[in-house]
Length: 75
Image 1 (cartoon, one colour):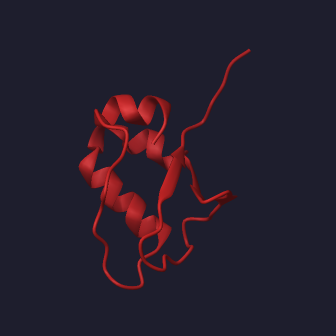
Image 2 (cartoon, one colour):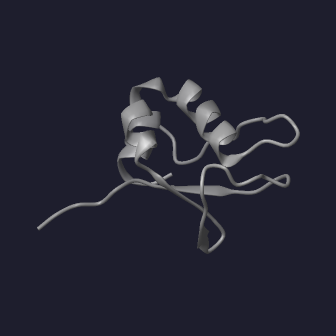
């Protein structure tokens, strides 16, 4: 996790257990359960596996590491 998500979670990483045939959306729902005060931020967070951005309907194969990338803005 990065930025505001780390601050809201109080940690830099989380491990979640998922059922077989889980998707990125399932993983994000598990993260939201662990960090309910970040729900609005998680809705607009980009997700990457390795060097590739992925959609929430992407199937997970096993022990992937999801990188959560919150929006960045500035002037």
